[in-house]
Length: 558
Image: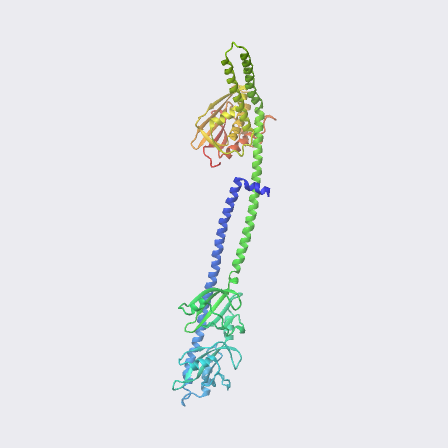
């Protein structure tokens, strides 16, 4: 947990993690949107399927009712004239009914009964003693004065004991009085055989309902549903009273509790609707499996990526820690190389202070020497102490860990001045001239101590390289390149041998004697400059060895 917090708390890592999470949220939003579109697509496909299926069923059922009604209209006229002596005999009527019934495969029988419910025509040709006066459709036609087709609720045939629906028309005598009915029966088994061939999927349903929501036929088949009335929802009542031909809805069935997508379509000229419902669970099953698979895959991929990112950031932090340690070690190495010069740098002012203090003491004892001389000596002591303090301040700043230091705008000449405070005595002792060509107005956005470290590394390398040469000088210059500042450190050396130029920036590569260098100076310097979004490189300039730092004037870092 502490390791995790240490990784996340770092500003750079925190930004990367936030950016990663934002990208994931964008990707997740896209996935959710795509899943939603896919979800709507599955429902739309099922909706189109149910619409097309109800259209086919409507045409089929409507055609069956219409063809039966046409024959019933014909037989109605024939039977209504049965009292005419010139008309057909009973056997001939039976044969006519049989002939018409055989032309309609969906029918089981054509029959007619008189006003008392007694059979007068039977296409089977048998004597039928069953009375139909108690049937609802008989009583309905007996009471009405209009000539219209009546379709009964599902009933069990009194003769064959099977479920049928009856299509009947009214018979009248010569005075227009009720004289019986002519009817045809459709066994519900016929619809069952026809519609069970349809693939409605698991949980799918097909219903034929009248305007009172009475079930006339249902697939899956169950006799317990036949003739059962179900409660009409408000939207169904509105649909029955509207001019709309079909209605698409989604609800939970009160019959079996399954949620379905329904299309309800009216039959033309008949008070019936055909309803096809597909289970939403079945419709969305493939979508759910696909979405679940994608969701789990995304979860594991994201988890794996986060783990990988954490390991990567942790390794980068460790590399940075190692780099910082190397930078600090390089600083200490540079301090070690400068130790003699720094001791001399401090020892000389101390000698001056000691001499001035002794002289001032004698002056104060000698009344012939004006007091002003002592004040002059003390002023020189103060100046010399300030010089020592400045050197020590520079040493303390240089030796501390500067990796957490903020980026600030610093004048290049001040950075060079701080660098020379640490090592100019060493160069003076070795007879090396330091030349400066600096514009006091040029400044860069940097971590001052790190740039000082780079310059110290370069100056130490130059000292080691030219200390045995007859002509010894080092030149530090800076020029404004617009958005960049170029700082060049050039010495009197004649350049680096071409064989080693490509390797000098590599860690631990050195041409110095054993014990005189770590081989990290140039590689660390290059890393520091690149961390400042700059460039660091070697070039032969005017025939002399030179290293160049190109630093930005303005950085986005803080």
